[in-house]
Image (cartoon, rainbow, N blue to C red; front, side, top):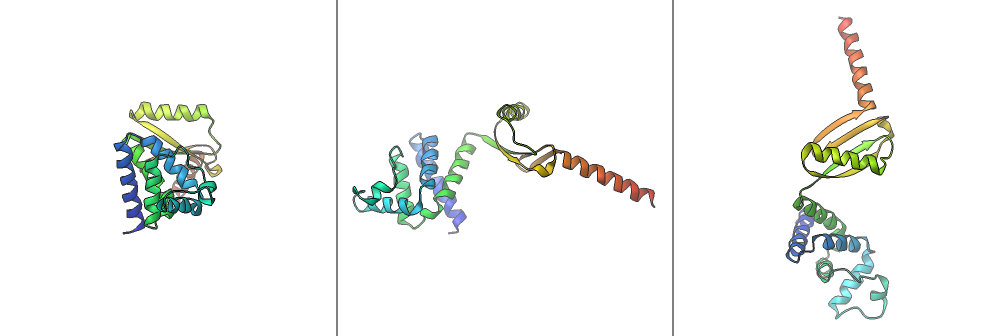
Length: 183
């Protein structure tokens, strides 16, 4: 099975387990906690569970997992047993996407020439919600090359209201007019 298919399989399985116990958000958080842990420490911890539990030595002292759902620890141990712990970060990302999809949250990417302040970000989220009736999470990026304005990407739709795009359009119009006049 390819890594992408394996990642999707494990993420769907984690989603089913978390939904079954009503812990979608807690599981999302816990998967991210484990994905951020040093992999060799997590592997040692998971393997120590296989041997009857962590002792007071290195395995339990290296990383502190208090508060992580036992189901998530078991899930990480399953990955470790099958040699798939290295894809835990990708599984956590896909799991998060599945939770957002389940909650009907959509994503939009916004690119601006300078950082957005919190108030502007909230205003854009509100305008998107008002226009579509859906909740959005904004992924904001800064790209000084757009000069000013914004570029908004929602799914496969791109709305480019940047100064760079307007200048390119003006350039094209001038060149097209020049070419038409020279004929």
